[in-house]
Length: 216
Image (cartoon, rainbow, N blue to C red; front, top):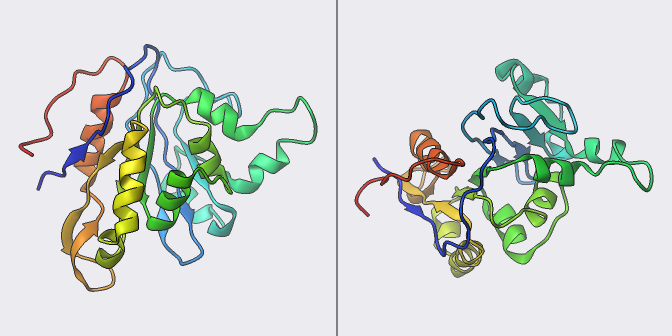
């Protein structure tokens, strides 16, 4: 099954330079897990100014707990916690982590994006590392979001409104699919298949040739 990709208004062109690979994971207060994945970067990308690495970076909220399990599952990723931003800053002139990550990345992907973080993004709220990166994001660079939530939440008028607001900023939606959800309900709200998300990212990498995702 092909996932629908809705780019909304196109207000940017891909810039030159290296591509970005990241995975961002956080656990919300209601236990939902959200992460971000993109394809691997090329050799011309700049290293992260925070860690000096060109490898993918994972961002976890403070509520996500111990990241040892994720480190064992993804040994090539460097995971960064919300509290790392505070520990890196002690006074004027010290680096600000969410700005460093924003400057370093060419592409940002949030997958899955739950209703809580979607609402924060639409309203410009920034109360953790992930949303601070989004709030500082250069809208001339690709930001791809992949909603995932219960069918009733997805069909709520606020979700439609928030999705439209994000697309009006030029953000790219990889639309949900219909299937049996974790709660047992059957309907739209499941995150798009990983292959379709990767294809959407590949199209947005600097210098990439745009291809069709399928008949929509």
